[in-house]
Amino acid sequence: MKGKGLILGAAIVIVAMSTVLAGCGSDTKQANSLVREAGDLAGTAQDRMTEIGKLLQQASDQLTDGNIEEEKASLDQAQVLIDQTIADLESAKSKVDEAASLDISDAFRQYLEAKSKVMEGGVNMMNASRELTALLQADPGLERPETLEQVNALQEQVLELNQQVQAAEAEAQRIADENKDDIGTD
Image (cartoon, rainbow, N blue to C red; front, side, top):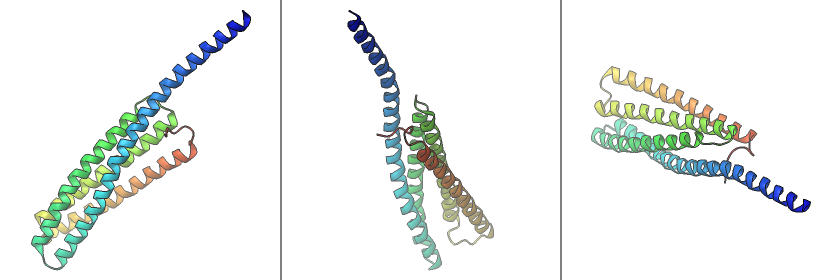
């Protein structure tokens, strides 16, 4: 009878523990799923950013060559991609923020908060790029002196935002490296 009580007690402990683990695991699994979705969106955004860079370089070359109409067309294409990229990054940030709000480890939450800053910085960079592109669309030949001043200021802003994004990414990586067992991964 005593053995039966120990087995029953062990079964109760196992069931209780599995309930606790299931609760943690399900939120971690849900968080991982959201992070994967965010990663897919961020990957698409990154591919678009490469294309945006090419289009802006192309527009610059077209300006240098005096092909203003072609420059405008390149800027228009870049603007469309910028808007799509902003939407993807905002959606990715939303998914990361949702994952961070779940019942997950503190280390995983800190990691996700750093990743959220990366996404937010990306959105801010793309907004500055949108403003830059709109400025160039309004004055494609850079004929007004204030346009060049504004372009330079926006380029400085983008560089500063890029540094912030890199710092947030480095922080996320540091957290991940220091907490490999606590960061939820599949």
